[in-house]
Length: 504
Length: 125
Image: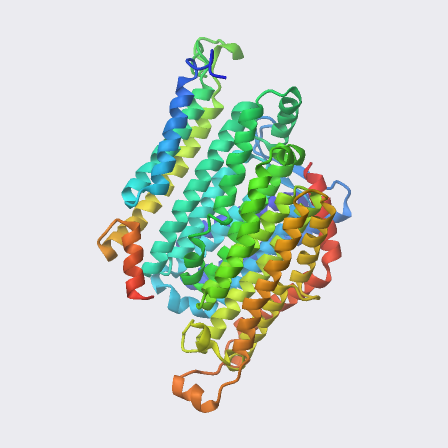
């Protein structure tokens, strides 16, 4: 075994230990440790990805502890896992850097190192969700992820964030209760906890035709449980408050990473545990499909009505989660590839939108009202550029990432050749138009000039790029990442496809 | 469907009913403490379900005492391990929920989540 194959284990351990050590460090050291850990894990994952592409093993399992397959715990790594780990690390780092200068005013100084503990734990649990091959371990890390996310919402310590955190926890606990019940029923039917062994038993069970009803219920419980946790419409009520009032780095991380971790677990369950053909047969996907379609419209319509810019971006997340589940609902491999790509695109874009929205409100007297933002794009040019690129990407303009994912969804819907084709393609069209309405409306608003006198009268400030160097660098890297995803979609899609094939 | 297995599986049936009760309480109760109680009932129901599934009638706990090493003599120990892990998760989640509830109660003087939301809206932030 090559040394590089230890990388998944090292990644999880580095982030977890960074979290543990941070509890006794000062805020400044904890921040440094967090950044070093994230960069290290990112670089290690790049190493792993290069190794996996060059060698012909495709994917491998890694024994945790000294017990072999049916008893012990396992990690599994492939091209797709390594790719997700890299993207998660990059976005986590950029979200943190983008919100860094705001952290001091958002979080009490004594609690700042707790923020970094939570970020470390969040990264660790996401990596574990990506790599684990054991479904009960996945459940435990789902809960760690939820707790870390709850902490990230509540750390701002205002009444709003406590309420948002409680609402978030309630919905999440409902979801994880259902997920745990599903996992227990699956364990009872198969007698295994490792995903590959479960798959083998399920194949036998399904061919013999026993346990058809319990299996249907199990699939339903797990899919709905994870859908609740990742805020699929109509389970999204907690989302606008949680994303709208938490610290800016938390909002960027929550919207771009936390829900994606659950969705990635769902993809693993589809491919590695139950098998896509049984999932498609079970008709659970039909329910998800209709929820997703409604969510795509509903989220966008709510975003149009919303006057608070951060809540608008949050409602846009509801619509985008709808897109991802719509891809699953199509039930074809093309749909799932499109969804996985959309996950990457949405993580990269939504975190950038949150961070640039913060830059825009900062130069408008901290006023988040839509009309207060008039001309904000001139007052903070960096944030304006970030918001413009993010909006264009969300609407689906070529060379940005959003275009590719919209194209993939349309192709997947057309090639699907089932009754789902028409609703999918029509909703895609309507939702794109609605996206364009609220994003372009905001872009026009921030680039509508106001006079110097008005600016002075309202107490608005101007921020040049060199006043916030880290912020500027973060936004530029975000823009480059977006363009990179948009222009290099072919190798990335190949990796996703190979990775999904290796899942089986 | 309902027939021979109805009686021997009553433990699982009770677990499912409790799960439903807990789930409904967590979802529909307005009082935060009652919600947390509902959550605990829900999780405990899952643990009951697991324990029931791990038990095999007529066998004993998997601890070798008399040198009997035959697999046929013992029950499945894995669900027990899962229950323990689940309890740890459940306890930590309850602790976080209770501490959040305390903070909200100190600030707003009520445990009713809807009333807290109404007060927040009145504050206008």
